[in-house]
Length: 102
Image (cartoon, rainbow, N blue to C red; front, side, top):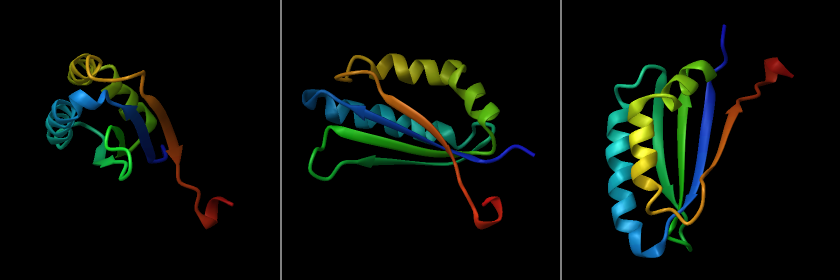
């Protein structure tokens, strides 16, 4: 059985576009509710650096996460955000380690 994963994406937004980027993020997060395999998503902003964002999402499997990354919905959000970003986002996928795994 595939392991659940947690995806973490960190982005730096140009300060003058923070409000617009938040709007794009919130719309994308609203759409996540209907994406196959997505178990939840949260948006965070760094407290002392309000143009640094982190999106944390949970997925049933890495394959469902990859399926979403290839989707038109994801590509549309990325295309819109690229105008607001200072650089490319940093994306990582993590598996939880439990006592029974060790």
